[in-house]
Length: 110
Image (cartoon, rainbow, N blue to C red; front, side, top):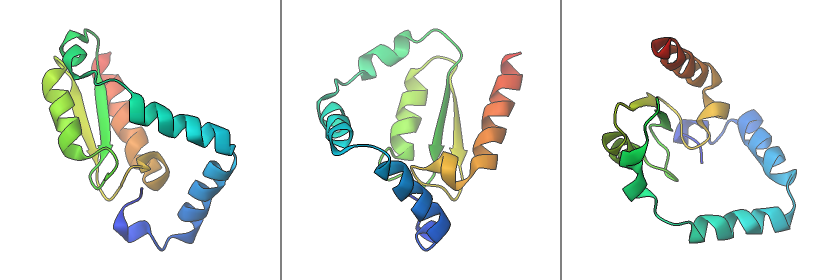
């Protein structure tokens, strides 16, 4: 879930574990079922008609950069921001970089 260099970051790992532990086993099970059974919406991406930012940690193994690049290529006028030195938990791993990317995108929309 995190960039390999952050695996020994006990504060980050403990924060992620605490977040997970705040949910019940039933909620976790429901999330897994939803992920396993969610429909493929790829065909609808070309229909998105609003400003769209896709954001991805470069080392995200759960939702890889290649998938984000594919989605960005299908969403007209979208923008893809890659957060360096981050995995799937980019908002927790690199909060300043994520905030900066979102701020820059929002300013470009004004």
